[in-house]
Length: 135
View (cartoon, rainbow, N blue to C red):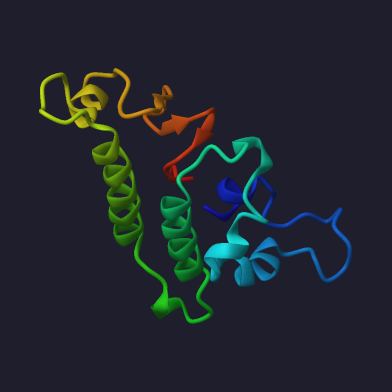
């Protein structure tokens, strides 16, 4: 998730000593809504919802907890990502109903919300993954 937010590799031997770990460098930025924009992938070109980006950053920070028992389960991660995605979809639905719902569109392989579905079923916006795919 951190790699998706930042567009950087988690471990990069080409970085200077003391900066090899993206997680160590990013933690202070993930915890502060105002600092988060400094580490967001420049390829997003600012085209993301800052509230949802901060929610994803908070989830990422929880996943980076030092104590393994403090980290969320994959089920919790997926549920949180779905909640973030659903708030985005709800904000974009036209008032008064009508039309098709983003979740129904996704189920039928169409567009959902403002994103595209990749062949793997991961929702993408502006060419960037918005949901974590299991590796």
